[in-house]
Image 1: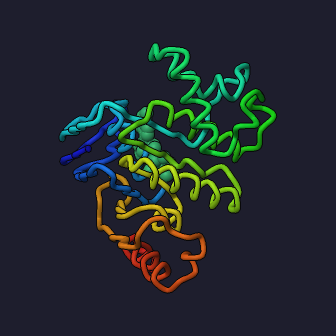
Image 2: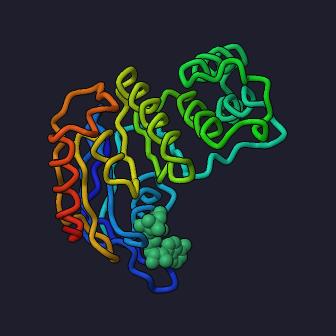
Image 3: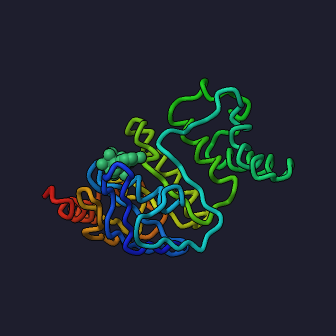
Length: 239
Ligand SMILES: Nc1ncnc2c1ncn2[C@@H]1O[C@H](COP(=O)(O)OP(=O)(O)OP(=O)(O)O)[C@@H](O)[C@H]1O
Ligand SMILES: [Mg+2]
């Protein structure tokens, strides 16, 4: 789905953000990236999305249906929830019936059907994030990039959003690249966790997560889960 080889991004001010990052994401694979703050995770994701030009290395993507979910849901306050979800369809000149049907379907998948006519300000932070997820699903992406999508919500909401995302993934089997600060979230969702070094970021190791989907919330308290998270910690040099 996407192959990154020896990626380097140096910003115009001279900051070398990532250097020598190689990774491959296959169709239907869920890969998480964890690493210290400022190590270049967002830079890597922006480069993967084509929003940031590499200064060296290559990025090859076979998907032309790409979705990007940011930490901030960035909803338009004057549009209803439904019309926020429809927005990308409008921009892509999708016909009205298709985009409305898909938007209602996407809203129902994240449990927000009854809020379709609400304005974003009347929703909680977690609900806004669900709208953002629904909006991304509208284009039926084959590749989804997530940059700290649940960083701004409380722990209970965060774990529910993780399960929403997991359900979407199990049903649609898009390829996903998730950047997160949460090691537990990375292990819970991903089939592989990549660990990045301090800046300039490169990948120092990888932990495979062989547990099948769907994963149950209580799996987080089993020894297999603890063992996997401790291996990620060890790679981060915390242990
Ligand atoms: N537009 C920019 N111009 C110059 N330097 C930048 C720019 N964007 C990011 N940087 C620098 O590049 C480095 C990597 O930033 P990046 O945002 O990719 O890190 P990150 O791993 O996503 O951090 P965090 O976990 O805090 O979100 C940092 O030193 C940052 O200051
Ligand atoms: Mg970041």
